[in-house]
Image (cartoon, rainbow, N blue to C red; front, side):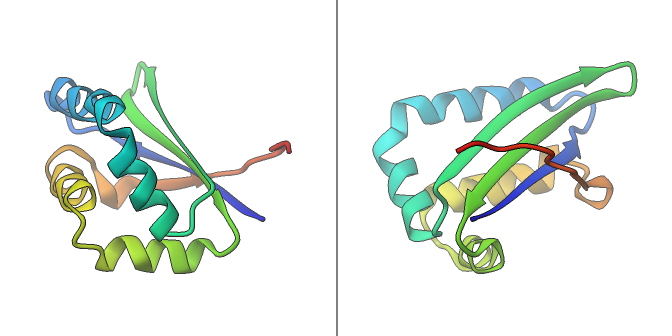
Length: 107
């Protein structure tokens, strides 16, 4: 099982919109489950990290082949993915994204 944690800074002033959309996914669990399954992800956790340097989104994923999952997301036309890609471009400083080392993930 592969796993990855990514930290992506949130562009100032866009956090409320991003937060509302992510929290709104709770009402779209069936669609989200379909998307994650189609992309081969077994776990996805999205969290907010606030520090003196500003807010960032933390995204933890695990699955058998994260490169294939990433490619599936990039090519997906599912409304959830299309919306998230749009938000990513408007709300996240993607050029400043970095991988955070995962020391333990169980099971």
